[in-house]
Image (tube, rainbow, N blue to C red; front, side, top):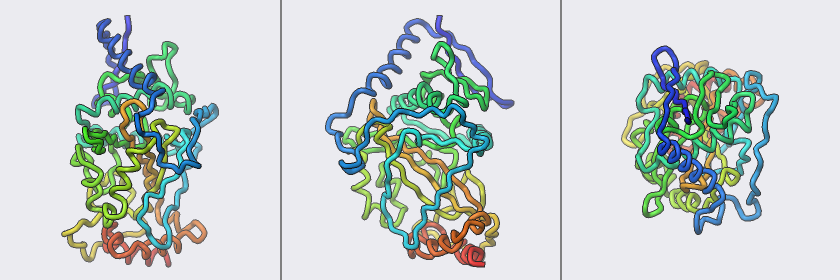
Length: 373
């Protein structure tokens, strides 16, 4: 008799719920999970033989390197300073090793507590359309059954039967095959410090937002983007559609499936506080007035950097867009040799349109004075 474990949030924490599926149900779940991950992992989508990377940089499949002595408690967050003197709108992609897909650092436990609180108190941290369930389940199965216990064996342990995975940090256990896509999204949100957006191709091959888990939004409500195309999502970003719109769709269609063919990029801005849940107030959109006489405390402001990962699932052909957010107080930036002036120069180099979009008119004068003091 197969017994699977499901974790459900309760007011006081998390409770185990044991379920005994019927033989037919168990067989269907196991077969479905196997087909989605193991079988499709050996296939490639017809016609999608070109990667985002130039032909000379195409990668061979990489083996995950286990971190047997890893302790996230002593691992510093990545230091990413992606700003340039003059802002140029481009994809700025680089190759991604599978070992870089998920990053854990000393903020991990604190971030998980924050994410779990947000998921209990905000219904719009997750969302999914019915046709995206296969993509969500495929990604979850890969991470839980393979990636996490292989890469981080000191944090994630697979049970002797191979059907469950234990998170040593939270003492919560999860099935390697999800019981539903919503359970999968919840588990992703409460176990990792990354947010995820699933872009699923429609009947015409146009990628649309099919599902998401977003605990740390930067100026938008992801629930309002369900079903949206890349054009619709990026419409508020100045000049993005004109310069990159068609290229983004073309790149997605040409990506070679598999995590070994993933890419990464970064995005940056100035946050007025260290709050990670910011679904609004970080951008100024067309038709909006820039607030005047806003009291800004530069000591509370942070450099907010998003480390974004992009790869195509081999089974469903969906694109998984991962976002890990890093916040660095400007007071710490000032302690790094030369970085305060570099950041100030980059803020001035945003240009009028991008500067307005990133709300520079709200915080710019006071932040520049602080960085150069």
